[in-house]
Image 1 (spheres, one colour):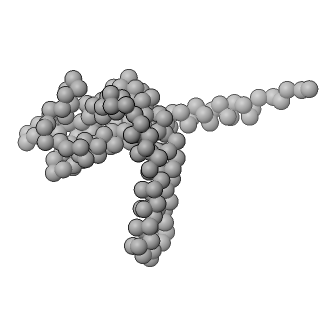
Image 2 (image 1 turned 90 degrees about the horizontal axis):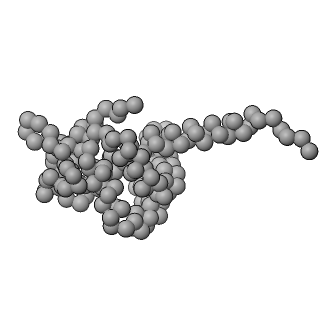
Image 3 (image 1 turned 90 degrees about the vertical axis):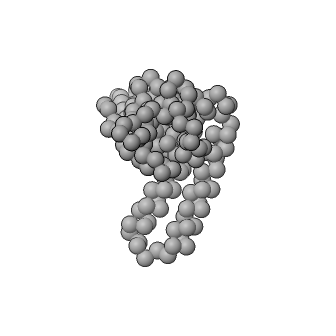
Length: 167
């Protein structure tokens, strides 16, 4: 199912986040799958708790929310460590693949950020490239992990409906 393009502003420029091809998306998901337990489980869990707390208790002082954010950063440390363990070629491959579906607005039209593995804009710095890469990862990985969860719950359900074997 296609994902509609999303417009974001990063570093004072407008970008359109598109969708990776089926095989590029699967390759990126496979390449970063070792990050999934930390990235998905812990970091998202903490962020969701923070969001829920802020909705239910708008009277929570800013210092308390700041403490929560610090906790999220602490939880993110294993994620950052695992990224640091990726070899350069694998890391660059993920970043370049992700940026290949990003386009930058240039006045009247959009131009691709990466073509054939080459950056087309020399002024895109590391923080902007990382922000755009993470945006693509979240968009691309969510359906991948959702499909895995559906498969996992289907296997559990099938196992629970099997007749018990006798002695």
